[in-house]
Image 1 (cartoon, rainbow, N blue to C red):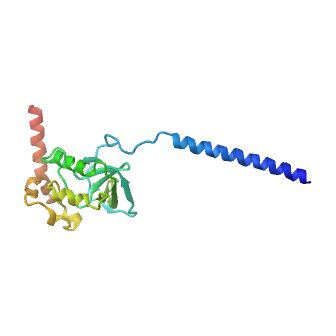
Image 2 (cartoon, rainbow, N blue to C red):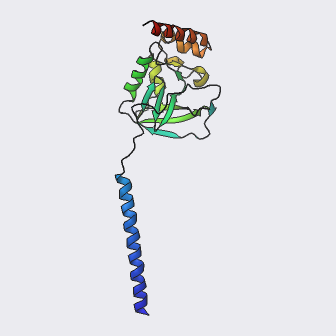
Image 3 (tube, one colour):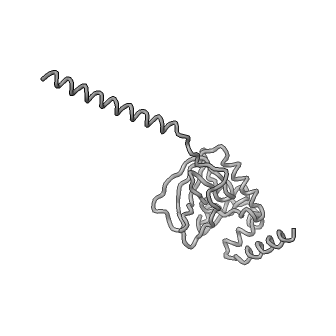
Length: 200
C-alpha cells in the first residue's frame, strides 16, 4: 500500500514539474517576443476634426500615460489614442503659425512621459483630455502662454483666457474665427491656398 502511494506521489510530482516547465517556457517566449511600440513616426490614420456637436462626456475617465506623438498644435497620440488638448484651440497645420505650434508642442513633449486625464469623447472616438507634463504643468496652459493656442471658453469655461498673450487672437485669427462660428473665413482662406498652390 505504501509503495502504491509512493508511485502515485512520483507520478503526480513528475506531472507537476512538466507543467511548471511548460509554463516557464511560455513566459520566456512572451518576454522574448519583439514588443510593438505604440509610438509610430506617423499616426495610423489622418486626424479627424473634433466635432463639438457630437461630443459627449466620457462615461469612463481613464488616465493614459506615456510618451506622445505630436500631430499638430493641439493634438497628440498616447498609447495609440488620439487626444485633443482640453479647452484650447491651436492653428491647423496649413494655417498661419500651424507648423510653429506643432514644433512648440513637440519641444514640450520630447522625452517626457505625459499623463492624460480623459474628459470627453466625440462620436468619431476622438478623445479630449487634460494633459500634464511630469512636473505638473498643463500642456494646454503652456501652449496658450507661448501664444500658439487660444482659450476655447465654450469648453474650458474661460480657464486659459487670462494666460493668453496680448496679440494671440489677432495672430491666430483663423482659430478665433472658428470659435465665433465664422467658418466662411476658413473657406475663403482655404480657397486662396488652393489657388496659390495651383499657380505655382
